[in-house]
Image (cartoon, rainbow, N blue to C red):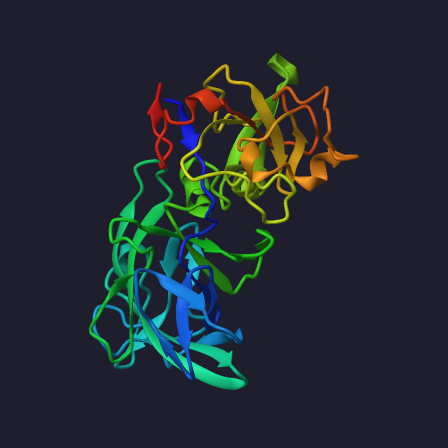
Length: 342
């Protein structure tokens, strides 16, 4: 049953990105004060003058699975879809935990930053409290995560709200440009109230494929189409990142109608066509969702909005994968989770 969707400004939510033998901090995260690091408030917050993150590393073995003493072997964590697996050793015995075995796992992380020319380090423990299959997609698992500073007894919700889960993805997204970076050693936990996870829950799972058929009868041909570009297109679309430069032009909770050329999502309303989209941003644009936020410069010609005769939501442009419609009069009909049931 089709729904209109509530878009978001946030790309991934409060962001720890696990990377190989370490992680990257992006978005609201870590408060740096003076020569030290202080974790406080919901989520992690980056602020203070002279801040430069220098990358981070796992501290020691990096994984405790249902109690102390398990040591990661080989390359460490492996992510397939949204399910982890690993090879670990305890008392000379090798185990191969996977999937729900990671409930209760803790990752010891060392966050390193340079403040006023001095390197400072904060040790943080990230804990997987629970893992549940999403109600939207059978192959998407949602993780309940908390973290604490080592030496502290205060566990804080990773997504800023204990009721909001996170979905793991291979690679990471540049916080400034919104570009996906296909780093095979990186894993991003995207919160389900931000667009990286939301786009997967809407069906655009970057690890999956969708069948596309053309022709009829004996001339019918079907191919499996990877959804990775559709997912990236969705992250541009949901944030109204028209120019594909990481700049959002929307407000959280704005209701939009979304469809694509694979029928992962299908058109639901007769609202006016807003735009067609590719992984690099909008390929054509009829109007913007929120004029008060300004018109994107890449769609201005001599200071006036460009006109497109073909921007009809039919996705005939070779680069366009997703189309959107928007009606300002229906802006309040949806909530932040995109739930206006047909």
